Amino acid sequence: DIEGLLSITNPSVSSIISSMEKKDLIFKRKDPKDKRNQLLYLTKPGYELAKESSKVMIENNQKTFGVLNEEEQNQLNTLLTKLFERSEDLK
Image (cartoon, rainbow, N blue to C red; front, side, top):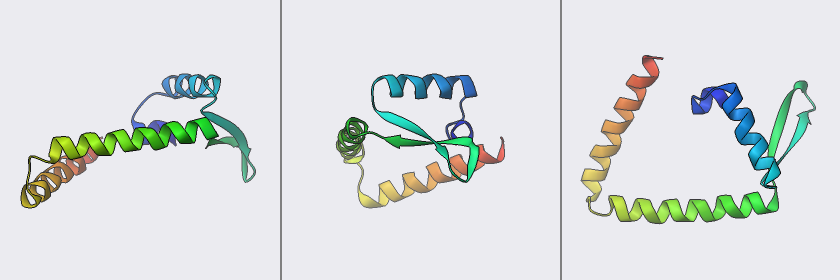
């Protein structure tokens, strides 16, 4: 369930999926186990874009968090996890 995972509305998800299909980044197939559902797959250009995006994100994270030593990174991770879990409880 993409809406729940990303905390966005169904129309937003539909719009994003349509846009990605038009750009040949994904394609849809009916779920053979449940015809009401559609499965999404990356196309080759979609896979390449995802791979490049991941690379850029990793580089940016290294630049951003590189100012913290390992202990500080662990503390930050602990605090962010705690905040995330609390926000999930409030939903």
